[in-house]
Length: 317
Image (cartoon, rainbow, N blue to C red; front, side, top):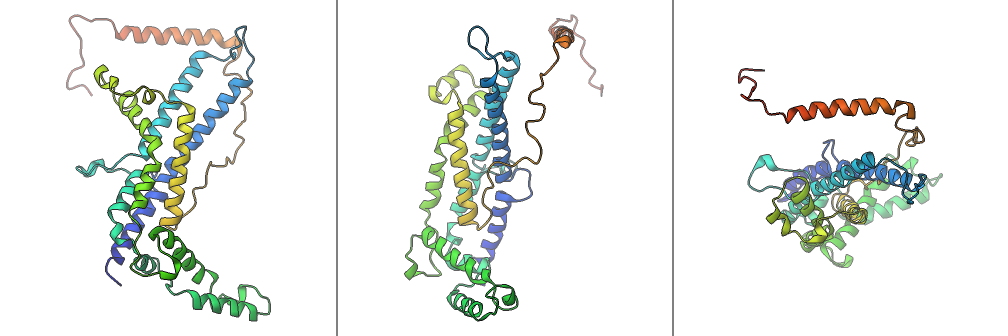
């Protein structure tokens, strides 16, 4: 095993775990959840457009409920985009994150390991695959059935196909011509810079989250934020989704030889079940009013000033 191969094997295992492992925070799972939640919101938005209109031409939907849905959607989507593009802390191990940005940064920092020869050894691929390919088709032609089943004990289609595809991908990654391949060919470091640049549309969302969602920035701090970064719209979220999906797919398939991003999850249930039912029957609206009043009284009671103050004992459990 040549120098760097074992280290690359360890890194590939780590990177593939971040990308599509069984961790609840793996990149593809984060991305899938974000896209599903956005799809549900867009269904709700379509419902508003189909709802009967009032005298002013506005949809007859409850402003309180739908206002909450809007706020929660934009904030949770912004947080999800922020998480996927978060940089790793270099100072504290307890601040390490799983994010697409961290993956790109870590791969870029280890670009010296990413050579053609190292990849082929680390992934146990046949570097000179052409003789295998030729023998495969020779045996296939000679087979009475012309199929692959009789070759199962001889040469597998994948023995050379994955190697051929890896070479083709590495030609692009190293910016080398296929006629001048070398085991020392390395992934061009500028590729990681280009991929990070692809994520630039997400920068405004990060600023929005930092100043208006995750932290209660004071007026002086907020005033330094450009106006375009103070609001997040559906179009902005859509742009971020697109670049995150494209970069994720490229890294997973081309660099890590992993899975394609599957896109929007296909529901194994009727996602529109009971969509035509009201939240509550008209005859029950009085009960909602009573529940609201009780809730209001309890909260208002917290604001009453007790003097002398009665605080729980330090020993209270």
